[in-house]
View 1 (tube, helix red, strand yellow):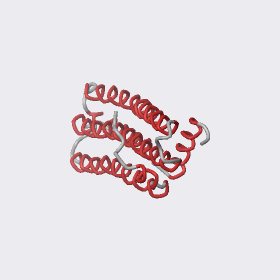
View 2 (cartoon, rainbow, N blue to C red):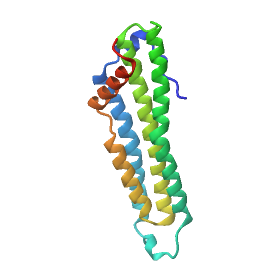
View 3 (cartoon, one colour):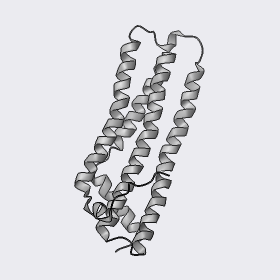
View 4 (cartoon, rainbow, N blue to C red):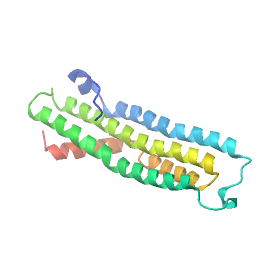
Length: 179
């Protein structure tokens, strides 16, 4: 399980959603941009190749891509949530035993969990995108390109915003009850 960075209680308490969300957006944007830039490289190297429709048969690389995509998407929708739930329960236990300095530190720790959760979600999807782009290069099929476009749309639809972060924080607060 990923560990939270070791910040002091004061540093956790000083984290503000307004500024913290910018870091999350930069990370998410960088993960998406890496896929887009590599997609550009694939497009440049592809220019003289015929699409796979001209080839006979089905390339086994596409079958591997479909299974890898399904597995990674299943992991993307389960692993980060399980990790976050576990870490939130640890923060709630700290709060209930009065080892936190107050609500600001509590929410600072939750923001770090939200960021870790988002990084895991995006990294799982990014890995599939890179594999699909390599599959497109080797198979000369447009199917992997379609998968990449769909996955980039998924990433864009879950792009971190201040409202999404605040909603998630409120949801965690409701889980533990009022202070």
